[in-house]
Length: 211
Image (cartoon, rainbow, N blue to C red; front, top):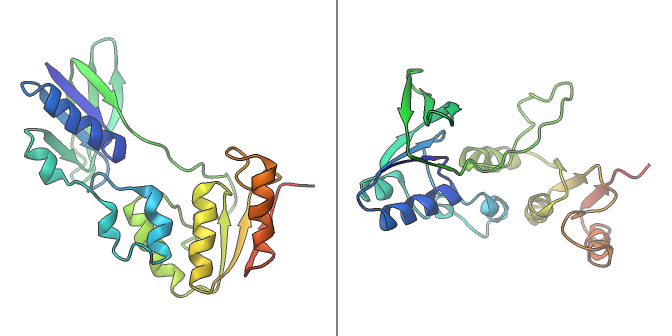
């Protein structure tokens, strides 16, 4: 049996380990766009705030560890197309730009999520950053060292944690969201009201989607 895994951050890493254990005779190919695996993006704010001092500590596996399980690791490779009917996919090597095809008997999709980027003018400016992967974490930490005023767009868990992390370093932070309260999708108003109240006692401001 031939198994292809697309994406190898947290879910992909765990899936690959389980597949290698459960099907030791299977051929397993893993395609990952980045040059690393198993990055815990949920810990970026902890790294920014200094709770986790070394960003390398946000990894719990490596391509070498997975390769030792007889898994074929294709790092910095992007899956372009999937032909589910014929069980074939098209792949591009992001380093050489070479394109090739691969086949599979079973396909595991663990591509994860990606931030929604609003269609705004100048959204590509160098000081507008995403917060999702290892390289993003390094850039955020580097630029935050020289910034005094920081805006965080998105008042979910990651946004709230980033505000706390930046406050820890004495930054003036503005949290922006198009909903009328923080953590709108996760908690009831009884809890989110307390979070919002904390902003009035710190060097942070909260800007909601209220008219």
